[in-house]
Length: 135
Image 1 (tube, rainbow, N blue to C red):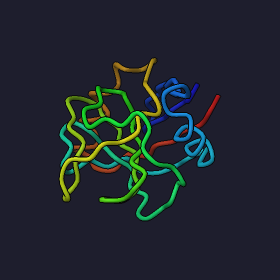
Image 2: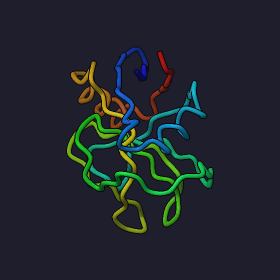
Image 3: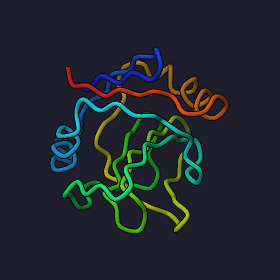
Image 4: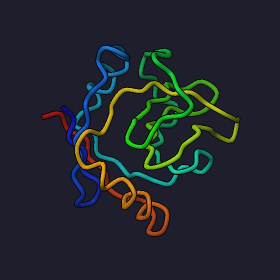
């Protein structure tokens, strides 16, 4: 299980190892991961963590453009930069280059009630600290 802390809010996510084994393995190599969660500009009710030109060494697995709230995606780079997308509501994954699809690698299973609050904070207060750690 993956423990996610956004500011003082705690969530737990299931890693989607069967659906996206290479993506989960690449994500695990980044753990523990501490960063900032910022509002996604083109994706609707989602936040993101940009990684620039970081090469995770993965392609597309179980890609989607329409993740549900709490269905976390990794975009492995290409048309846009490498990133984690953190949907907190209705989302259509996109960038300034147009619609994207990302690898669904984790699903929030505990703390889903915090998703709307995370979205409000990111939108109205700006970047929020985020920590991912496997437990």
